Amino acid sequence: MTTIRLTHPLKALLKGGLIALALGMTTTAHAWPDRALKMIVPFPAGGINDTVGRLTAGYLGDELGATIVVENRAGAGGTIGTMAAVNSPADGYTILLGASSTVAVAPNLYKNLDYAPEKDLLALGGIGSAASLLVVNANSKWNSLAELVDADKKSPGAINYGSAGSGTSHHIKTELLKLRTGSKWVHIPYKGGAPAMTDLMGGQIDFLLEPLPTALPYVESGRVKALGVTTRQRAAVLPDIKTFEEQGISDYDATLWFGVFAPAGLDPAIAQQLSDALQKIFARDDVKQDFEKRGLATFTGNKDQFKQFVTSEIKLWGEVIQKAGIPVQ
Image (cartoon, rainbow, N blue to C red; front, top):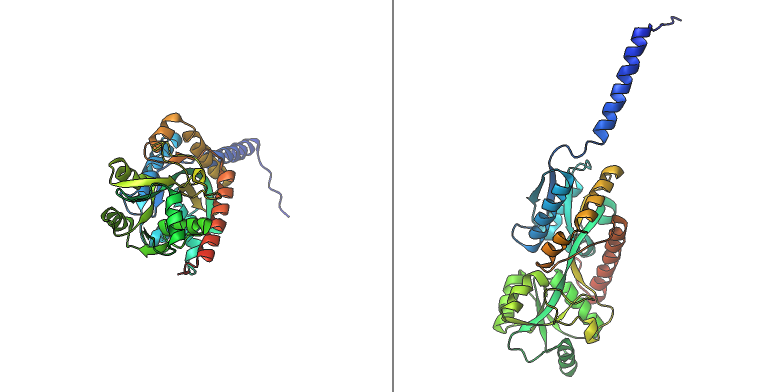
């Protein structure tokens, strides 16, 4: 067997090269991000989901020192864009705006859904949540949730409510309220929230459970009347509107929520950087105020707390869909 002896200069050269290689690898591993990130927003431009995504992308990009480009991938109730994120490389350069509808409701509503959030997505952190308002026509005879419930008890099935469509957040949250109150309200589905709101103002339907950010201008202008808010705390922008809990409805805390997710398999170090950056920006007063003026309360927990919250939401809405008899599509 031939033995190869390395001369001192060659040893030094190889040693130096290996050290440089090791340093280069270390530098590469810690260089993220070294280019722009993409945030997939699985909804059309212009709505509340898009607004939340763009606000978050701006603040998060500034914190990371990188540009985050928002890409709207709408369709099929947000599931097309969500699936696009699931199928993206887990390299830290694609993140997803996840919402309660796509992460918690869709897996329980669509039997042929191609993704399982707890398996295919990594929860990086919460963004915030928006309450919903129970709104009635401005000239409605009802002035509280209790009056609406009592009216149903006197004439079961005589009161109806609108929604943006079967299986939407409007629909499912109202079905949860029906379960909690024992009411027999009749569901009138629409093709979107806008026509439902139009018919509410016109007196064609009795009430609507509408996300606060979209209901707010109608309430402030006096075109509709708010009877209650779905969260345990009153909304900062409408402090005079009582919560459902204050009106005697226990075990009801339903929100439209948002969070940042990545494809499963993301490097833990990068995941932690993203999570830390999210926590840092949502601890800032200016960021909180920017979201609050749009009717959104920011999330303050870490990624583990957000993950637990997501798990509980998937379970909750699965139970509501089953108990309410909402058809799985």
